[in-house]
Image 1: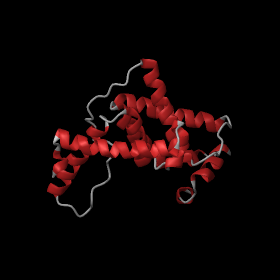
Image 2: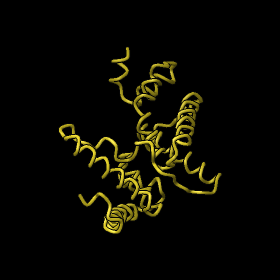
Image 3: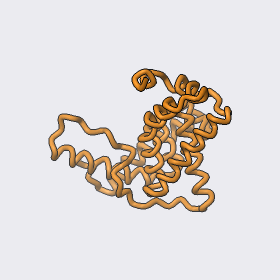
Image 4: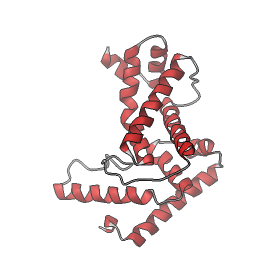
Length: 196
């Protein structure tokens, strides 16, 4: 049964869950829990807050599915990431602040990029590079950081990013371009370990 669910796509699992299959929901949660939690933690930079927002995200997903309000207007993965993003925005609006704390939890936008054949020294250097780069991403202007994370983390196309942020595709492309240019400048200015 589990193998069969694993082979089904998201929309098939959604339909099964709506029809009463709890294992279908479990499969969806397992499929997206790491991606959703990592995204939230990268944005809020606080593990306890990330855990709360993660739970809220899946509660909202479950409630929307149970009440029959889910509409297949795109990929399920984008829908769930949009819910997480909106909950983050709501949280910061309620608290009227956008502060970030140190990332001491080892989960960030650049996790999973190491090569399996690297030596211990190479793994340590690579991890330091990604940690430094992740810290620099938080220094980008909000619009550039948002586009960068949507593109890299949520695998969204520039058309989808443009629709999500209510800007033109050219504006979304421009923000990504400036995000990359600004990251390069920050690397030089901060003289981080990225110069290895």
